[in-house]
Image 1 (cartoon, rainbow, N blue to C red):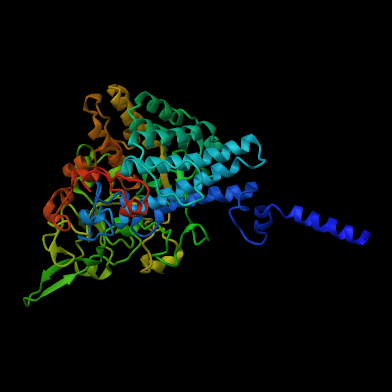
Image 2 (tube, one colour):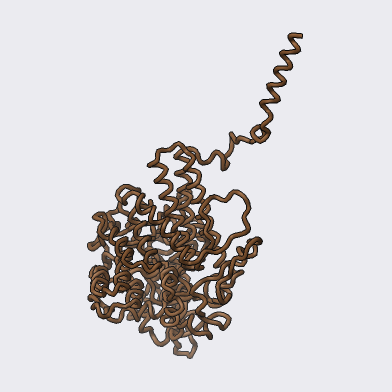
Length: 585
């Protein structure tokens, strides 16, 4: 009897212990990563934050070959040298269709960034980290979330605000207004600015308080809060850790031709560890390192930033057509291709500089502004084909602005038609005489392999020169043209350009100065869409897109393109609420 009572007690105990079925059935992963065991230690959260950096690099520099360049194609800066393609912006109707890849790709990647940031913010609250550690992780995450909402607001207007981790399906999103979206971005970035460490306390490439204040200044401008924009920009400009580079520096400082502007874009020169006090936030690329984002083994590898491939011309198809004594016609090639010199590496000439970018904006300082020197903005291409030199010893260069009358480019067309084979381009897109050694087919003549085309340089996301131009814009909005001109002239003085008179400062002048200083490094679409000036500037500065006859399927630039459409895939999936489309789509 005693034995039966003991067994009964054991059974009762087991039954009472197992009555909580949810706990009993809960799986506890012990040998694989899951959402339940991935956010425990600081190492876990550091890895998650690294994922945010990875997402930013993918969005702006390497989702695939084309996506990063959506920020410059279709603007006043460059036009597409391959007309009609919907992969880029040669056919605007196809490019900006709600079912097209361009609006969908950026929407998806930016919301992925928001989702990952929300997970970190929500999960860190449950840890036993110190309050200081928790605040730092939140500040980093809010910086990236704020940057994502800022970008979404510029591209699409008001969008759904998702501020917490979503763990179950949700199909009832509604759009906030554009102002609400920008204010959310501002709140996020303001917290980051007030809680991130100074740039002197972070590694190269890490976000810092000055990076957040730079972005905050831009957001204040977008919201019409101009004095606040001045104050935020001043937090960066007045920081003693920063200063425009004014003397030659870095890995190739003794080379001629060259200058301090040229030095800014040479390999390994972008970070503070190289003595550069101008980079506010620099996106890091490590070549041939797993996770480094840059490879010499495969041109099309996701992550490779192919600025060289897109923005340098494809000089291979430039010919000098000469009638021989017997009446036959022979074509001579002045250039070898691809060659890692100042003819553009392995460029293929998709991102063709507009005449406004390559010529008009330089007219007042064409010869003295170092940013327009031939080693920074190539117009005179040195002949590099020995056979051509032997045949035509008096022709040393081919001048884009004054080509030989018998020069043909591409399929027999003359230089009177802008084409992808020869045009002025910025050398910041490439690394002349400094490609990775693995890419040389014949290093003695700088001949490159066909898999070249990536730009093997860390990239400025924010640079101090731009901070000055943001503050100048805020001063202009405050009707203080004297201070606006003073900030612009800090940038122009470094470039040896003539100072601008305060009376000549207007928003178009600032946009022109941004072109001169930032060029193809700027995410130009974001600037123009922030100001609501994309349509106006393209119609003024980019005849290719302004002319319906040359824009893809016959329909050129339209005012509705000041905003992209909400992707149809997002609207279709949102079955329990209406996700309103932007006007005109």
